[in-house]
Length: 343
Ligand SMILES: Nc1ncnc2c1ncn2[C@@H]1O[C@H](COP(=O)(O)OP(=O)(O)OP(=O)(O)O)[C@@H](O)[C@H]1O
Image 1 (cartoon, protein in one colour):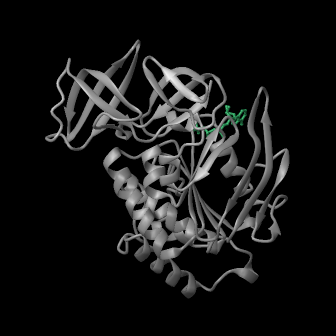
Image 2: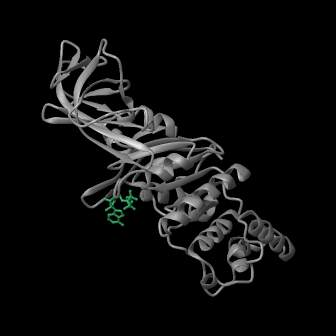
């Protein structure tokens, strides 16, 4: 199911939780809503679910305007961070819940429900666990059952709010890969909230970066990482060198650096570059001669820090053996990719 979100606004006293959000989610996409705490991710998910009504704006499911509809009428599957399984029901009863509580005319018969529950238990790889109670499951298993329960009603969209947030790091990574595979099997349009950039970049087809109730950038993980559209995204995702300087006659200038400013107008500016885009090079046009301030080798990765006036520039490479960098040495580097933003 395709989702179209247009001009959503939601205010709480003193804060715009959603401040004009537009978003198109294609049918079958797995999309991550990524942003720091308070950026509006959960509010957006709840408005899409129909758990919360926006002050203004529209939510379309396919061609249909769902803005005024309730959660049930929208037919969405929702999974919360904290396992919301019913403790007094078995796993099978939990999964069947959404189907059993349909109005009689739309309720499948008992045998069909039992079949569907078994299919879902297979899908989430817990075929033997139907008779257990939630307290007899691990945290990761509970979340898989919560997902099965959300899928039972064949939802138009699946909405996941930090589904792995309460789990330890190892289980989180396992479940994240499992969810990706599951998504490839089901092709379910899925939107999930996370504040974990690694999770978003690894799992999603596209990432929506949020900031203070607004969408800051939408793109594939690769595009978000390699071509951040703003200093905010540059600093929020991955590591970034930041050099403060001036654009003078179209060139970015800072402590001996002068590089093409990429069309940024003259004035105070900042240059952003990923550490792995700072590379050793033979002297030439646009290379910099810098003194090594420190070198660190960690887990097959080498990081070197260069002094640049009062500022610092980091280089990172996986080629630890081939790079004989020593503190105090002068070397030539090239900033292979960077972006200049006006300050
Ligand atoms: N019920 C509420 N009453 C008042 N303010 C709220 C309410 N719910 C959310 N807010 C505010 O709206 C803003 C967005 O909150 P939201 O929960 O959507 O952010 P989030 O990005 O999901 O954060 P987190 O990662 O911490 O869950 C925050 O400033 C929050 O304090």
